[in-house]
Every structure is written in structure tokens, then in C-alpha cells.
Image 1 (cartoon, rainbow, N blue to C red):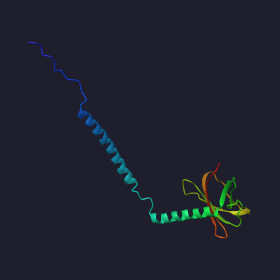
Image 2: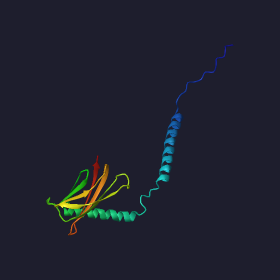
Image 3: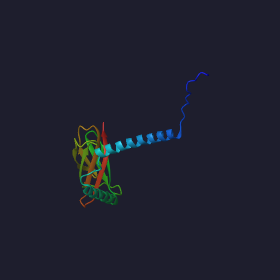
Image 4: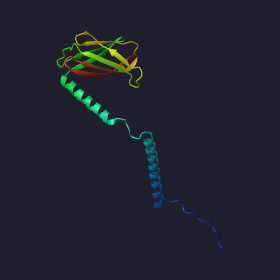
Length: 163
């Protein structure tokens, strides 16, 4: 009799069903993670951006019409700052200063509504309007509206920074 040899095991081989199971498991994990992210995203943001979308659209259309009218008018504005004042210079299409405008404006922080500052402009020279400011530091969003006696309007918006 010959001694019996321990049973010989064949080495592991990757077969077609192994590849199928691996690829299927990979895509199952990817799909499961995507489904979890979609459910979480939908629960935290259902898609409603505004409570009044129609009215917001009308305001946006009015804003576009105002900017087109401003382009046809040809008025331009330049803003300069100092620690104590903001100067707004308004000129017409030919570069001539515009006097007698009613200028209103304000400053807002870019990231919050807190601390808004309303500005009181006065004309100090033809086409040059000054508003006093004090104690400003950091970045501010400036917006001003100039209206002429004949009905022309200009809107100027800039990001201003104080040290």
C-alpha cells in the first residue's frame, strides 16, 4: 500500500463569476452612496428658492429694463473713498459733469444685513457728490442712485474696502 497523501488543494483562480460579483458589488456600493446623498440633499433643500418667484421675476425684469435705459442715457459714475468720506462723480456720455442730481445711497456688509449705513450725499462741485462716513473698516458693498431733474437715473454699485 502506498501512503495516502494529504488531499491536494488547487490554487485560487479568479473565474468569471468572481469578476461579475466584484463589479456588481462595486456598482451597488456606488449606487447606494448616491441614493443616500440624494435623499439627504432633498431633505435639506426641497428646491424652493423663493416664496414669491413670480414677483421676484418681475423685479428682475424691471432691473434689466433700468440698466438698459441707463446704458442708452450714457451716464457714468466713479467712486473714490477716504477715511472720512465717499465721493461719487457722475458724468454724461461726453464726460461733462452732471449737476443738480438727487443722490441717495448706502453701504452694506457683503455677508450680513447687520450694520447697514445710509449715506447723505451733497453736491460740492459740478458732478461731484460727497457723503461723510466714519469708523468704517473692512469690505462694504456700496450702492447709489442718482436721479436727474429731467428723469434720468443712474445706479452705481461697487465693492469698497477700508483698512
